[in-house]
Image (cartoon, rainbow, N blue to C red; front, top):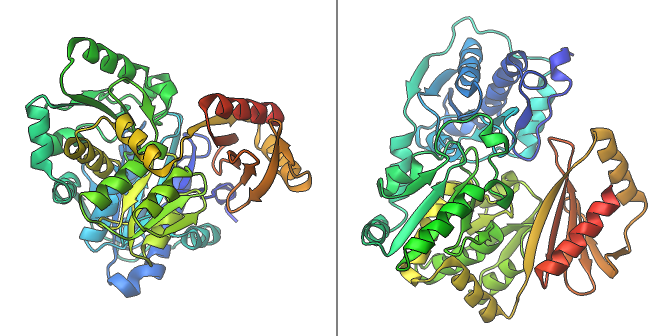
Length: 478
């Protein structure tokens, strides 16, 4: 087995590693042709195409790694459409479906810190491939793919026009634009130096106020993840705007590094995760657009999601964490919306892929058509369902993967019976360990699949109770 194949493992959405260590041109040149061959073996009988889309985000040398992928894939006989610019990952998923390709290979590390890069593999249908497909890629790495007698063709394409045209057709663009132009709505967009840059302007015009739009592979020293600790700049501009503008509604929209995750900030500069946005979107799309279908949530999703689904007589399906599980379900069921707590939301009326720009448009449409600030909208849903809660999540860095293994073994051999002074009444292990407590709150302990990080999630009646439980979990882990 080639040495470079040993440590290449696909996580919840692709393969990622530190640039120059795990993620190198050598390893990428091994993985890309294998991924192309597995896409061919899996999907050629369906699409009859030998074309692979290759795209990239704005990370360090992303365009160079993308070109290396294109060269490696054409060398083994596949045709490649290589993006001529950065674009959101969902734009490449859209291209795969629209252009009848086998799939897409996207150079991105999503929300990871700037030292990381990675490869996402998308199928012909416009979504993440299944875990079975990534396992096939891993299994074939030891064999590799021989060079072809006749290389494939390499052409470039612009992914933006078709993608933005498709998005415009799914919302009332004119109504949103009018609200912005008239001053009824002010929109700030924090693109976190990532691939969402310029996206809303293409859709809604230059009156969208974009921040952190320059390319910065170090992401201001943080990570391009829509979490409060990285959003001080957005909080400041919204607070400043409110001091000088008392009329109209204001919203901040936040996009991760490759624009497949979203969060929001209300007009009082309060952070709103997808735990808040998903119930609002379900309500809006059901009431005002007449959408119907199944709601898909990951195991880490808020308890309000099933309650709002029940409010509209919608069925619910729960999956492990990772959008590829949602995408799998979207391929076999009529789905209204599928969402995960980390910000990935997708729609049955679109491709089976989380898409932050489409989510942003639906959020803006919900604000314009309801005439309400997002937090007011959310409060109304809590009152309708009789459910009030708070939620938070922390990512706890671990010293090593060995520490991760020891904690995992402890959970398996010494089950927790009490957490923060509350009895454990149930433990769900569909993904990680989700402990339901006697007061109806819950704590979820889950390990990252790509780095030595422990993810801790909690929902409880108050934010104080949430932080008390998370502090307990942090102490347990340390």
